[in-house]
Amino acid sequence: MMRQLKDFYEEMRGCLAKAPLFVLYLDGLGYYMYEHALRNGKISDLKERYQVEPVQTVAPPVTNAAMATILTGCLPRQHEICSRKEHVPKVPTIFREWGHRAVCLEGDSVIVQTEILPRLHTARSGKTADEWIFRSALKEIEKGAYFIFAHFHGIDDAAHLWGPYAEETLEEIEKKDRIAGMIAERFRGQVLLISDHGLHEENGAGNHGGICREDLTAIWGKKR
Image (cartoon, rainbow, N blue to C red; front, top):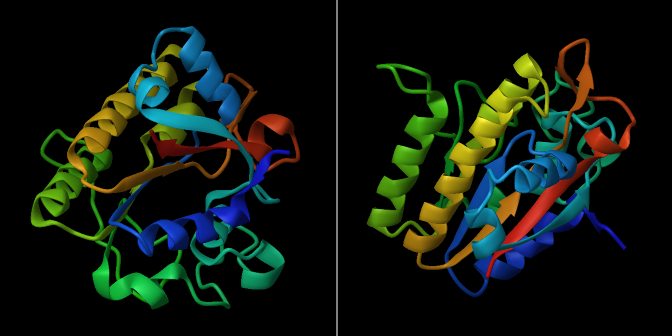
């Protein structure tokens, strides 16, 4: 039976009870996109260093709803984030329990409000927000942070613009593959990998939010 996205919350809690944890959140990397990148030679570290499998995300398969489920272990009808417009969950997140030992690295805006403030990153000085997030993650690893939750947006951005199976999107997946490898090598603890949804091709670009298997099937991984 395929894993369910809501169960990732308990996976995080179980890991945190034993050792430091890094959550590598790759927004928009659907399982069918992952398989396509694997067939086209764009993935090596994710294959070698992680056990990767499909996970069924929530409906609607949009970032706000899925991220809230990742952080709370509840479905949209419970946390009440059911679209891209809502940001405040009606139930506690994992940061209520672990916020005193956690850092949340986010892009240029707050997607889901939690008990801690995320550290925001914008594109600047010729570098993308994801590149700055990665730099921040390395600094936190060096400082010995116990719980790092890092949300990378580049794959989703590329897939929306060019399509989920386009060469430009494959190149973005390859970049995140290298980042996943470096994190697995440097972080002295457990590393969990999660995504929130996939995308389907639509009018020469990519989209998600509908009830189709490409949108609803994301990835779940764990460092070997």
